[in-house]
Length: 357
Ligand code: SAH
Image 1 (cartoon, rainbow, N blue to C red):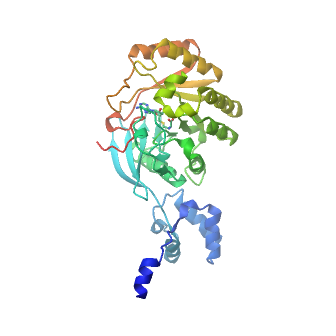
Image 2 (image 1 turned 45 degrees about the horizontal axis):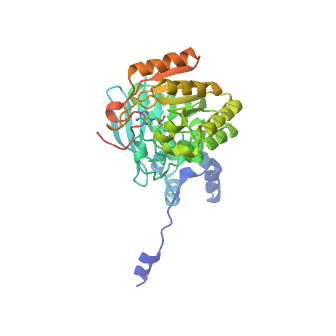
């Protein structure tokens, strides 16, 4: 009787993820348990700079202490579940989270650098018609440690495959980073701290589909990383059609937020832009982009379209791309043309949708 009472009524309190604790909180835990605060520093180092997956990895911590940790906490480390390698060297990780959900992150090697492209949410709540991730329902935000772990995993792969550390990070994987603002910033804090990966914020770019209020908040918070905005069209009706959520964020508000960012940070925003056949490949579209670019100093990245189906979106003809390049250059606008990478394994921009080929 008694046994079944417990079976049915005893609620298990889930153990706390130790990586949600600050260093001071871990130090306090040890002091409260009659140990030295210094033990907290050692554990913190294992958790972050040494990337420990379990308490048993912490070899300079006594067995007894590890047991206490195990009784009180868990380490919800991500698990790289599946790795795909593209013929161009790009590596895509399918990452399993502690609750079984999956996100993807990508390692993009070039001659001069290796870049990690990481996810900030499981799925996405936005509805860009040309993006495969938009078709996945947003399940939840990623925690700071889940974002950090993706970067740490890619750093290890970079060392393994290319013999050097990760050089850049772009928040251009699944999700809208500015709709998971707090956790994205906490993850960057960890990535840039000496106790984490010690990376310079100048090597990190956060990409947003354009949430004016949050762009202003970034500026107010004095962040030091780079900002990219997925523009794709500087004509309101066109942008509203291909990125329907943007009806709530008029271009004028976006422009004003970007000016606010530039005035406060002095850092140029990069506009990401895909040119599609019959959608934004005419003179009117180019002129609108030129005008938009003149408000605030900026850079433009022309991204190749990565087809996600045979629908209405097709890469524009090369003449249209040439027109964009020459007219933007004529107007002294900095423009880069980005070749897509990892297309054969669905790892390129906008293709992340948990597909295994
Ligand atoms: N939500 C953020 C982060 C995702 S970044 C944002 O929109 O910026 C992904 C980048 O790839 C964005 O610039 C997005 O507009 C672009 N993209 C989406 N689908 C694409 C596709 N099929 N081909 C090329 N680029 C795509």
